[in-house]
Length: 128
Image (cartoon, rainbow, N blue to C red; front, side, top):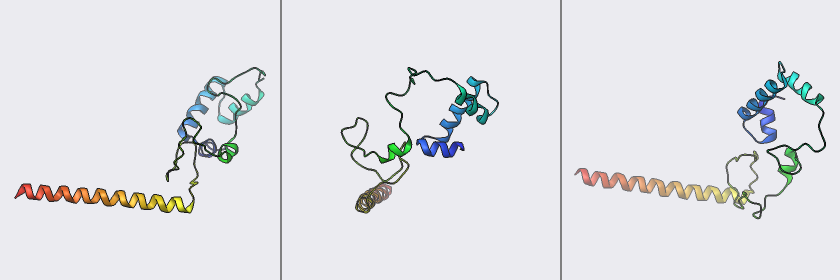
């Protein structure tokens, strides 16, 4: 897989994938990413080996995307936002939520434009 394909599956930047691949190639003494993958697959894995950055079982992207996000989970917001977030590369908003966000963003733009025009009017009065 390409770095962009791997990044899409894991929900990380392709630059992060490239960084990890470069480190793996250097550590394994490989000459390419294919050679590193072959060498890594040949390494024995101890049953008590733990990854320092991961706690518990490692799940794939399909399980992550299928699991619902609850407000009780730490670090997760119950508010679904209309833009892509790290680790969530799909727009999972319902049509009603999308329309709601469009209304909220339109209102925010109207308020910003009104404030801008009000500021220009104040500057014009000061210039007189």
